[in-house]
Amino acid sequence: MLRAAQLAVNQINAKGGVRGQPLELRIADDSGNEDTAVRVAEKLYADPSVVAVVGHLTSSASIAAARVYGGGATPVAMISPAASSPALSGMNPYVFRVCPSDVQHGPRLARYAWQALGARRAGIIYVNNDYGRGIRGTFAEAFTSLGGKVVEADPYVPATPSLEPYLSRMRRAGVDVLVLAAERPGAELALREMRSLGLQWPVLGGDALTGIEADGQLAEGVRVSSAYLPDRRDERNAAFVADYARAFGGQRPDHRGAGAYDTVVLLARAIDAAGADRGAIRAYLAGVGHGKAPFDGVTGTIAFDANGNVPGKTVAIGVVHDGELVTQTEQ
Figure: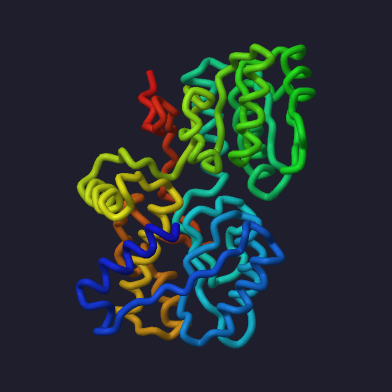
């Protein structure tokens, strides 16, 4: 997120900034922690030079921070590039996101499991937070409605030392797909223990697994739902991927970075059109796709609904292949 946001700022400032003034990023780290997110939000809220917030990353931190940004006498718009929990939807008029919510991720994974993999009995391991519970719930509802059965759904927390008991019970119960509504460390633990148990189920996961492709053979074949994949085929994205690679040593952006890039560019457009007043920026954003033209970004078309969501955004399925996450071609 930071790299891509800075890339966007650098590009905007190289063209003269906004209204003749340079954009500046103020960087804060919420550590993925709700209490820290609140303290960060309070600090940014109190700074009158902060006219909008790009973030937060995780659902739990975003939900906690959104209560701060949307309150008081001078609320400030927050646009999350990646927080997908349905609980963020419509929290207050100053909350937006440029990514699909779990309402889209879970059903997309369920349809893929049912149609592309032919799965009928699923096991779910989920991190016990807003993100994990969101993916678990929306997947289970959609998979069941298709005729499938969720045989077992088990929670974990980051300190959980082993997922082997869950995996062993699922083996006895007979599942044919494993859904990891998990963050990357938990997914890595599950994959290592699957290997030690000799389990070879197809594995699906939500977008919090992005980055697991760096684990090479351990993650080979894992399918991941994502709002964005860098091999997305359009000229705007191709230019962004090339610029990102030049700026950051050949690296590829992920959905979090692409979402942050789009957010900065969209905010620059809002400031250019409406000025740097917090309320005016929020009013501009609320009209994007309603009275104002949608915003065409590297992640696709952004048009906000009344709850600050982007219901028109679609979810792609990527597969880990040779250390990269690439768009899965469905048969």
